[in-house]
Image (cartoon, rainbow, N blue to C red; front, side):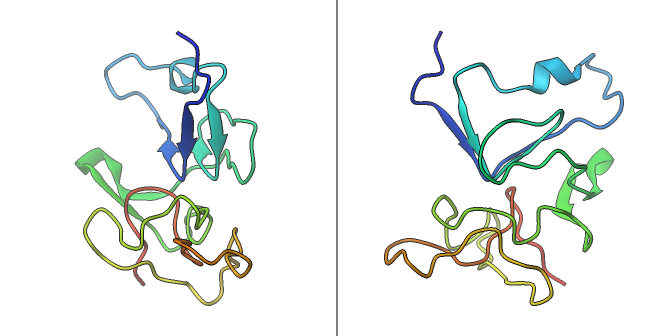
Length: 124
């Protein structure tokens, strides 16, 4: 099937090490034609704001996908695609010493100025 119109935004697709399922980096790549922005993708992906760096989860081996303080995902999401709260219902948090990847100042509706890539917002 074609990826026309499909998109991945503010997401993390990362596999570090052997998870026992035999995944390879090529399996993690978005299908051709899928638009990707402001995401962390193993092996990289073309598009605005994409990062090819370890997202630095707290304890992925224990399914704790919160972000460590050094994570490149912090304040790196697009405010256009970010809800006002994370998956746990926590409001977005702007880490003062980290630049925001996206500027909402010219956008009036439904834009979050500081958001992290991924499901969980970092809290110091």
